Length: 162
Image (cartoon, rainbow, N blue to C red):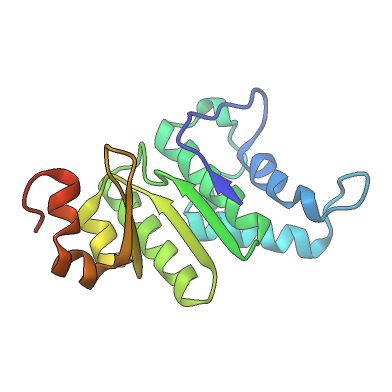
């Protein structure tokens, strides 16, 4: 499953329907949800913190709320790997922390989590491994400890990184 940075505004869809679309790969030919699919959708909305908004139209949500819906949709797909491009874009501090904590819990539970972020401090706190893209097109990869030992962050950003 994947979460992109672009602002998603599917017209005339309510939040629950958008999250339920994450189950589409697992439904029958008519796209009907089973009771298990409904349970997965409910759980994904609760994990992302949007269950209380379930009946609202996506068009009437804030950018941050829409981003949480996209996270919930990805969770509803229930895939072994989550790919997230700036999953905390548009989020306030509280929801940013919630999403990062959720991603860490998912990784600890055995799911693969790969995300891009400009929040270096959070990446250093949460990541098992880092991929650091340099402006010249090269990529450094290793553990957080290796990044610190080898000066990979300073090299990439041209400044000291705490």
